[in-house]
Length: 297
Image 1: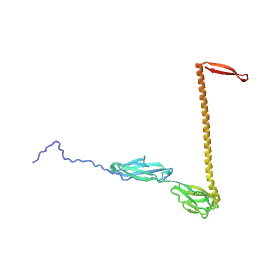
Image 2 (image 1 turned 30 degrees about the vertical axis):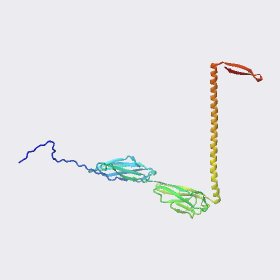
Image 3 (image 1 turned 180 degrees about the vertical axis):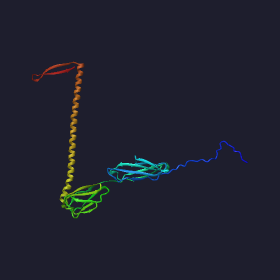
């Protein structure tokens, strides 16, 4: 017996429903590649790569927390995407050691980011500076000179020499340091430190003057007198400047007072002409000369 089919309102039928399957592939940490060695004054090219993600991840570059634009592109490989972002910029020696960060964002990361940092390696020519000893060198003292070097790559060899002469036989060279014990006046001269790498060379000089004990005492006592003399000269100059300003202000004040007095007298005379009468009298003065006076009433 076949049961009749009965329709009931508001009762859902059990039917199979097919939903599309959405494939989500979160990105791994980005890969950062450099095209070639960065050199001072040139351009560096960095490439950030995320080989697999779905949907396509978003890549951004940051340098010291500042967003810098790059050129992004993507390629579909089956059901996933490969994302690249290329960054190019000019570098100087001050950029050596700074950090550039590539950041990947993706819906599957739920607000988190995947980051990879790259430390810039910028090569540049060396600079050098000799650190001199403190004070005046005397006979019997030990001279120690240090050659402070800054270069990338670091110079492998440091050359010490003396202008127009050879180094003393007792001179000792240890890397960037030159030591000459038991100084004498025969050691006087110009000493130089020279360094070089594949990007350039640099040098610095130090003039050595060895004094005997008597000259040292005289040289040391002359320094305070020079300082005191300079201070006194400055004070005298300041006093002269103050006097000049005071005289100028005094003259200016007198001129202003004279102008004000003249203006006042002119005003008073004008007032008397309007409200009173001016009478003239000629008085005989000494020597037979006449003197004219005006009386205002």
